[in-house]
Length: 195
Image (tube, rainbow, N blue to C red; front, top):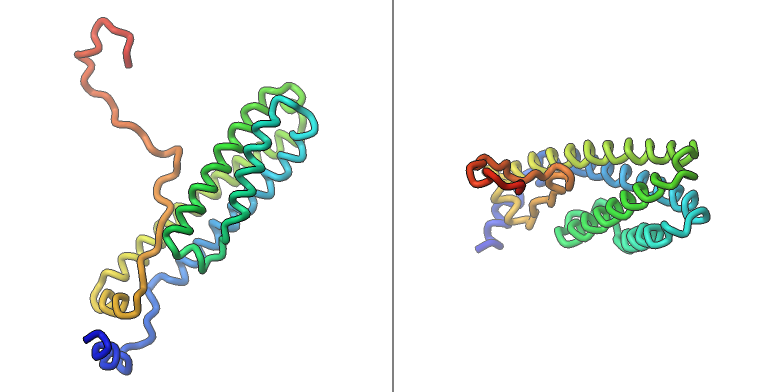
């Protein structure tokens, strides 16, 4: 049945290209580029922090391990279409971000780094790159939403099923943007210090 549909539709349908495929690819390249900038800054931070302090050795090792895990993941835009590879990439990036923030907090508490202009410059650059990563991820997610919506509109949904075109994965909300439900029942808290 599907062979008949392909034969009938093969000659009369234009080449199937989802509406916003180029936009999604461009947004993904921007996200990957921003993550690459963060990785380069992390390497600079390690070379600055590693020789000076013994207290941060475990944190430096955690950043290096996270970078090594990330280096093992193939991050070509063509491979990021696969949901499993995409999730693996997200997890590795989150681990690197967590390790970096721990290293920055511990190093920032050290007086030697507190007044070092190279350290302060790296902290500012990492903060700027993190903001750019969040903006690029949001732009990617918006492009993916449009792309996935275009796959679910007739006749594109039929074409997508025939040609096995799948929806693209998205990053979702950034880790710091999730909030818990606000508490509105304060009657049970009278007389206690619980929050």
